[in-house]
Amino acid sequence: MAFSLQLLHREDFEGRTLRALAGGGAVGVLAALARRFHIDVDPGFAVVAAALAGAMPVAGYTVALRLALAVLPALPYFYEAVTPVPQAFSAAIAAALVAWVGQGGERFGKPSEIAAGAVAAGGLVPLGMYVQQVLDARFFPQGGLLGALVGFTAVALFWSVGTLASHVALHMDPVESRGGTLADTLTGEAKDLVGRTLTLYRQCRAVAMKMAAGPGRSELVEVLRKMAREAFNLAESHGGLEAQLQSVAQGDVDAQVKDLRARAAATEDAVARRQLELAASSLGEELNRLDTLSRKRERLLAQLHAQVALLERARVSLVGAAGTEASAKGAQAAQLAKRLAALGEETPPSPETEQAAPQAASRVSS
Image 1: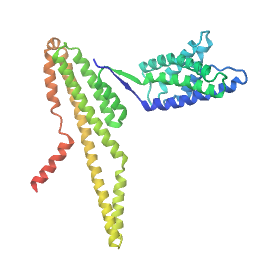
Image 2: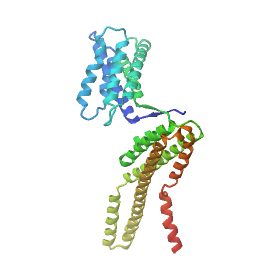
Image 3: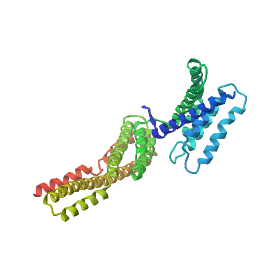
Image 4: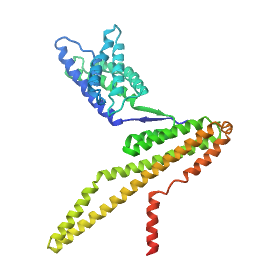
């Protein structure tokens, strides 16, 4: 079975890492100043500063998260333990808090994401402290501002890299991986439909995998994958058109066309009138193209609804057949595969086909 790793919310991780490095560097500067007064600052506190600087709290949890990050990661230092045990636990606590309510956006971390980020950060911070010691011994034996800045920033970097584990999802199925990635790039109704497609595909696949192993079950799973992939293709095309249409305000183009035509009608110079009319005609063609893209987007969304409905029908068929004796023998799987493949052929024609049909009819009529 193929495994695939999916990186979720990459932009949030990159932004948090940059802020975490700034936080670690700021503590390094403070540590260098404190050394002049014979005060040693533990490099592990770079983790606390990195978490405070990098966290992007969910709305309504800003104060609570900041307070928790300032207090809870410091608790391991009150227990008598050998370095780097307190620093590792401090890093794990900070990473867990950030993964829970500080990853960015209005989302809460899942238990698996919180645990993964905590374990990885707790394991990497001791390595970061070792790197900091090597840097001090090799390049900054006299200490100083630059040595503290580089060393504390390195510790913050290792902690931030550890939080990457909370952004990684392991998928047993490449179709699920693609659907999860696609859902992160879409908005609105298309995003909801992709999420529904993923849920239906997982449910259908779970029922299919309970059937007896054999060619029939393999064929059935492949049909389900094909149905889900078709839905994702439609959603991806719809997202591309949505991005194109959002980049151009159709109302502004229409207003420009009207303004140019009004100017052409008002001018008395024939050359100027001709230039304005040509400009209005050119923008009018662009307006027609935008209108065509808008209709195509609506058709794609309708097709996506139809594809999701097909998966709903597939789920009902699978659930209905799951309890029969024939499914236990594996004979039902091949029959279901053929039936679902036939359902897939009932999908409406693509927008390109629908657009070509009227054009062909007009050419015949002429």
